Length: 91
Image (cartoon, rainbow, N blue to C red; front, top):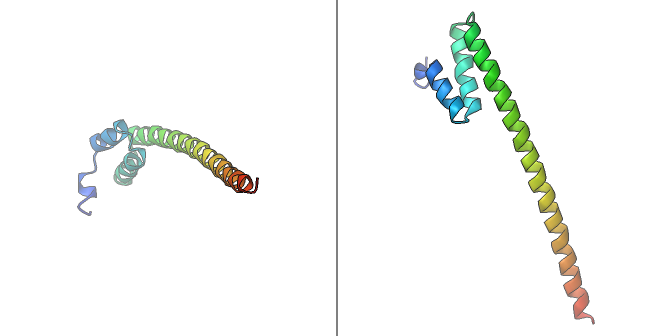
């Protein structure tokens, strides 16, 4: 055991889950399952946390995609504005 995993408990995983740290909660549950692979409760808890983690990752990807699209739009708009400024100089 290393020092970090010495303190892995179901309670710790629950706290991580409540705080939205699903990846860390999943890590704790997987560690606990290595030492108690027969535990149906731990399997169910891990499954629930992984569903939440997948949902969070999906939402994060959607947010990132929206931000990226907005950034592209702003870049294109900025480039158009620069071209208009140059064109205005020639008038």
